[in-house]
Each structure stands twice: as C-alpha cells, then as structure tokens.
Length: 248
Image 1 (spheres, helix red, strand yellow):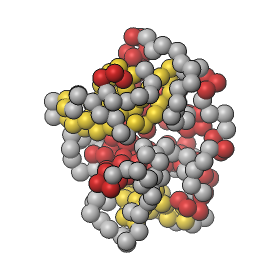
Image 2: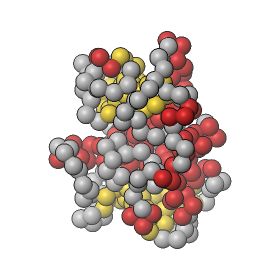
Image 3: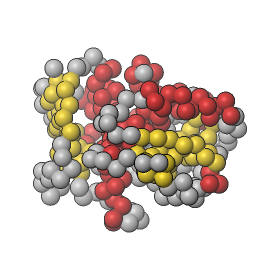
C-alpha cells in the first residue's frame, strides 16, 4: 500500500471548488469501499466505519458525494480517524477522485451502531489534469515552522505538505539522530472556527500528519518503533507531546 500512496502525496490537493467533474458511477463507489478495510489503523482496537452518501444527505455544498467517517469513542480515536482518512484521501487521488475535508458538514446519519460520526470528505471524480502538478508551489508552513533539528530534513520537506482538516497545520517535530518527537501546537490561529471545536480538529490533523510521516519514513527505508502519548500530556503552554518515533 505504501508504494501506491507515497507518489500520491505529490499529486493530491484539496478541492475547495470542483470546477469540472465526471459522474461517479456505482462501480466507482464500490471501488472506494473495497480498500477501506485494508488501510492500516493507528490504533488497531478502535472500530471505524465509512458510509458514502449523496451530498444532499448532508449540509455539504461541494462535490457529488460525501464519505462519512465513523469511530468508536476511545483514547486517540480522532488521531486514528485522521490517520485512516489520510490513506483514503491518497488512495482516492490514485483513482482520480478529488477530496475536500469538509469539517463544517453535518448529516442526519450521526450513528452507525456503536460508532459515532466524526468527519466527512466531499468527493468528486475529476480529470487527471486537475490534480497538483507541483506540490512545492502550494502554500504551507515553512520548514522552520514545523521542524527543529537537522536530522531527516528530506522527510520534513515532504510531510509539511500533509493536508489539514481545517488548515491549522498544528504539528511540530523535534528531530534527533535516532528519534523524532512529534508535538501538537496548542496555540494556532483558528479563524472563524468555534473555540470548542479547535482541539477536536487538531487531533484529526495530528493523525493525518503521523500517517504522512510514516509513509515517508517507510519510503526512505527507515525502521521505527512508535509510542503515542496520553492526550493530557502537556509539554508546555505552546506544545503537547503527541508521539515519538525511535529509529531502529
């Protein structure tokens, strides 16, 4: 799966507007569902589900369909859904399906048995030429804003392009020769987002970032052991230690 997903980091983009599109056929929808169970979770024992509905069954105004992501509510469940959703996003780029992480969306399908609705992805099939041609021209935080230390800067310059569910980009990494310490930035600009929702989406974003980080590390042939930190582990007023990776 990693061999397929890594090149898609350079291709995918966030489709805030679908200027032209192709219809998603029933066979396309079935193909979207197939790989979901194969995606690697961040936390294996958290149950997750997905559902594809027409956008008219939500408050979303973009795309043709929406993918609804659901999860059991356990420790790190938001990171886990971000981690899995990031793989889904990249796989959809491989299939020429554009994605927008639609954080403001609501749906009547709030529950799926024991799983609760977490976030939706607006999707639309588009032609190949609507995807990104040069990732490095996109506007993201600079390397110095997300990475400290000289180790693994080749990885850093790729993972800084990880999507952010509401563009907070709340990640910061302190790199050492044999370890990466991943922090969630506490004080980030939130725009018009309600204050009570900020950390909810930051947690999803951290899962997205961890997924991109691991895809890049595996691409570079690095073996590692990871450890997630408790959500209440406050490192400072500015950052919270989220995870660390020991390079083997």
